[in-house]
Image 1 (cartoon, rainbow, N blue to C red):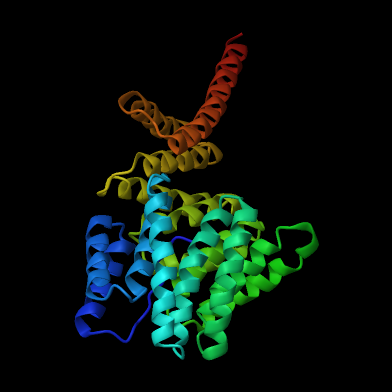
Image 2 (image 1 turned 180 degrees about the vertical axis):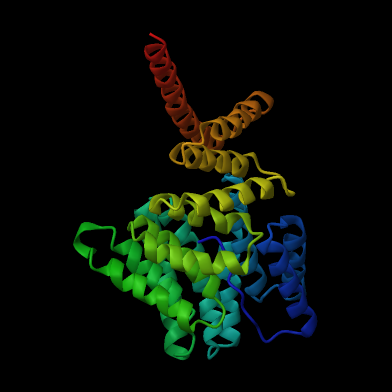
Length: 331
């Protein structure tokens, strides 16, 4: 899950304005501006878990977009603060279901962080923690359908274990409820559900969900990845090409990201190979080798580069076969 949950708190107009501005910057990956605004929210009311909640979402978004876990400690730190100050907030406002939701929502970020990495035990541990808070939120106020994102995430990742396989579908249904009826978490739930459906190889369903949120945020780099991968899985090469070319352009936007750039090249290499547009494919693949020569790659960038090498080998084999066929015709 990579999107910050949009929430409205009973706060001053100034605080609400800062939150809305911060979300606007976050959705287009303008991290410094978003972080500055969310930190101002924290300073305005240090006992309110909202600021820490938004910061945790922002740091998670940055990690996914830039392909780095360097900010993991900052990510975990603000989640811990959301829990700490959320407890105080709840003592002051015990009948406010949203207070419980903010704490559970922050823990849900960690649940998805580990779950989408395939670390299901860690995801389950945080899912259990999140479950207590989101269940309480829904119990206090049954209209807080946003809580179903956390409830569904817990059920789905629990379903990765042998004795609980049936829980996966229950989890997916709950996340669908958050999309349909949630007041604040529709985009977060849609993004999370799209990625879970991809994991289940339910690509047509994933396509429908992901297309909707990319249409809402066409300049978001982070949202494009799962949609491109879904198009590739479905063999919709033209649609995949359009999104991948757009992603490559967006990789140049500040902050620039070689991780995003390499991923876009990886996509384009696969797309043009299947479209049999080999010259175009080789042109983009050559850009990856230029990047590697000019900059030391991070761990995640190296992983993508290995995939690019595998695609490049396919191009070489195709080129060798073409030359051999040409020689046979000459004879």
